[in-house]
Image (cartoon, rainbow, N blue to C red; front, side, top):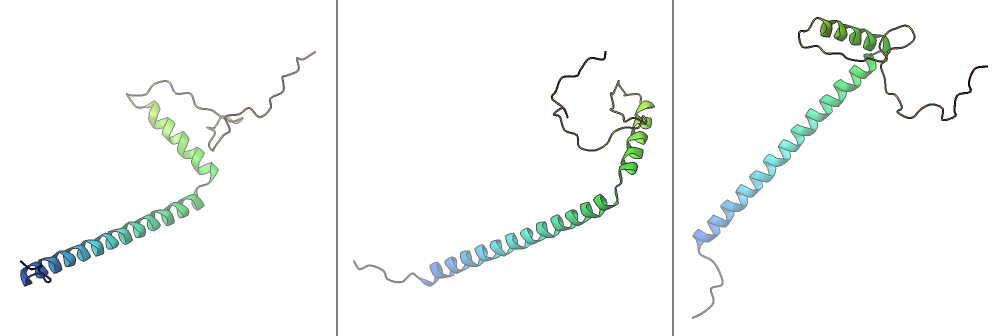
Length: 108
């Protein structure tokens, strides 16, 4: 019995079909990746626009409006909200480390 050097045409057609199917799958994945990248860029652009238009005063206003809505809600509970010197809610990112680590000097 001799070793078969070439496959029959049916095997070759099947292999060619599998290769074509794999190429199609790869192309679909490339297009999906491109779609996700475009979506992510759109979200990033929208976030940049929003960040550029938000002011501290607007955020405080929105915080106050949210509190007003919560007061009239049947599901509200006690919520402690840090406020600044003029009584409006503080907004922003705050350090959890105390500003000063020195002990207070008692009044005389």
